[in-house]
Length: 159
Image (cartoon, rainbow, N blue to C red; front, side):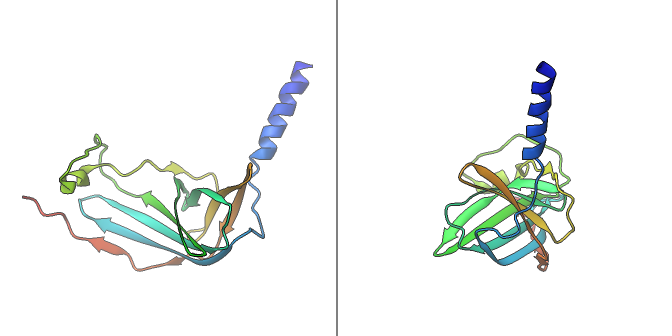
């Protein structure tokens, strides 16, 4: 009897994590873009993904999966638009302790947030949004995300 219970639990868990994509989400993608950036400090770089949605009411957005990485989403609302932003670090700097200071230039030495590997196999211009409506978690694939011109930031002045 215990084996049957364990198999039922495993089967139920695998069904929940099957990651089937929603084909008709309760929102509309108005715009989806990404750009790579670098600068500020040697070895510091990343990618920012920005997705604009219409009619994304009563939805709690959680994570974004992009180019084999995963990160939590920043969500902002403006009129009937929801703007989702995901930051992905591609920095090659060594890890350091977090610096918080009134002089924000000292904070430039902070290590970017930890980004975990994605559980989805995606093309370079595809992303997956993870969101909740009620108690259910859903996944929606955003395709054909347009790449913008890379941004290069100047190094911070040393005093």
